[in-house]
Every structure is written in C-alpha cells, then in structure tokens.
Length: 172
Ligand code: ADP
Image (cartoon, rainbow, N blue to C red; front, side):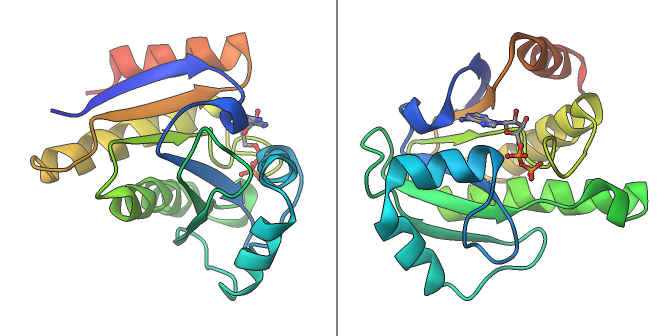
C-alpha cells in the first residue's frame, strides 16, 4: 500500500530513497531546486549528469545522490515550460514527469518530488498540484505491488504546502 503525503521541506535535506530534481533538458544544472541539489550533491553529480546526454521534456534519468546523504538516488526530470505548450499538452507532459520518475524509483521504498515546473517554468501551483496528485494516484493504482511505500510532495513554502494539501484532499 503506497501513501502520498505533503511536507514543507528543503528537498536536499529530506530523507527519501529517491529525490526528484526539476532539471532542464541539458541536465547540467540550473537555478531553483536544480541549483540547490547540485550544490548539495557536489561536483560529482555534474560529472554523472554530463554522461546522460540530456533528456527531453517529460523524461527522467537517474543518478547517484553523491554528497546528499539523505537520499540514495536522484531522478532528474524535465518539466514543461508552461507557456511553451497548449495547456492540455503542458498537463500531459507534467504528468509524464511524475510517471517516468515513479517508474525509475521502482525497487526503492520512498520518493520525494519538488513541485516540478512551478518555479522558473511558470506552471501555476494549483493546477500543477492537481496534475501531480492525479498522476501519482493513477500510477499507484496501476502498480499495486510496487516497492514504493511513500510518495512525498515537498513544498518549499507554507503557501505551497496548503495548495498541495488541498489538492490531496480534493482531487478524485
Ligand atoms: P522549474 O524550472 O521546474 O520551474 P524551479 O526549481 O524553478 O523548477 O522550481 C520548482 C519548485 O521547486 C518551486 O516550487 C520552488 O519553490 C521549489 N524549490 C526550490 N528550491 C527547493 C528546495 N530546496 N526544496 C524543495 N523545493 C524547492
């Protein structure tokens, strides 16, 4: 039985087997949570990411967590730039980020997601939270024997935590 929870935390310090990075398509680091993860993991992460050859929007690639002792693996996913797609396509791509990350976390017990695309990529937090919760619930329903026990949605502000909690209570 897999549960979904929302917490207020810095994902670089949050204990979870897999933590997800909201990367860009180069997978070579950036600002926001990406910058924070690279700073915390250290230069070996950039080296490992160089070998991955980038990723397309919705795709996820896995690396070790290097200097981040609270995680075993980092799943680098590329969220959609909200303004670059029709809304339904942005939602489909964002859901794909959650699905592809969960697929790669199979074999582990826990995964923690930041609010993918809701920073620099401009996806409204309310809409993104509903997409995230629906995509995770659908994936869990389709994987009744998954090793994943806990899926955590990590908010970086009190307000984002409230939005995530509302999505968890209201989404079907
Ligand atoms: P994107 O380019 O996908 O929009 P950002 O890093 O700009 O990625 O923002 C994604 C989300 O990550 C935002 O909601 C931001 O508040 C959040 N965030 C930034 N730093 C951290 C952190 N250290 N831990 C958890 N979430 C974070």
